[in-house]
Length: 219
Image 1: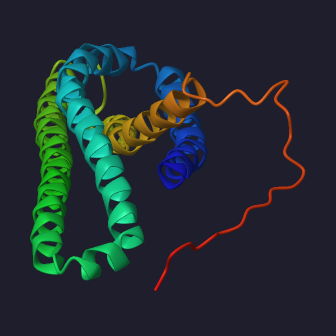
Image 2: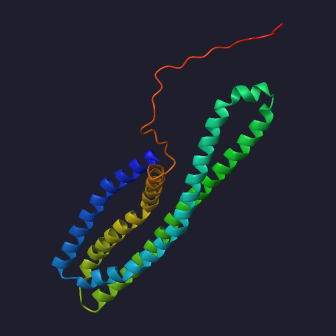
Image 3: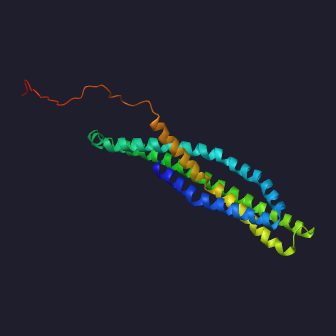
C-alpha cells in the first residue's frame, strides 16, 4: 500500500505539473494566433475522452478485488510460516503446499486480470486519440480550404492539437496508477478507522510475573 501511494504521488508531481504547464502554453499560443476554432474543436472532443475514462469503474473494482486478495494471501502466508513446525509435526506438508499453491494461483490470476484491464484501457485511449487526430487534420484542411487559416499553418495547428491530445492522453494513461494509489489510501484508512483496538487505558500494569511447575507422581 505504501509503495502504491508513493508511486501515485510521484506521478502527480512529476507529470501533473508538466501537463498543466504544456496545456497553458499551447492554449495561450493558439489564442494569440487567433485560431479559436481549434480550441472549440478540442473542447468538443473532450466528452469522447471522458467516455473512454468511464472504463475506470471496472478497473476500480478489479483494483479493489486484487487488494483484498493480496491482503488475504499475505495474512495466510504469514500464518503458514509461523505454523511450519506444527505442520511438520503432524506430517501435513503436502496438504499445506497444495492449499498455498491454490491460493497463490488465485492471487496471480487476479493480478493478470488487473494487467489486462490496464492494457485494454490504454489501448482504447490510444485508438480514440488517433481517430480524433485524423478528424482534426480533416477539420484543419477544411479551415484552410475556406480561407480561415493559411495553408502553411496546417502542420502548425495539427502539431498543437496533437500536443493537446497527448497531454490529455497522458492524464488518462496514468489514471490506473492513481486509482491504485487511491485504493491503497482506502486500505490504510480502513486500518486507521478500525474499532478493533485494544483499550489499555486505566488497566493495571503487571510489573512481575512468576510461576512454577510441579511434577507429582511422575515415574
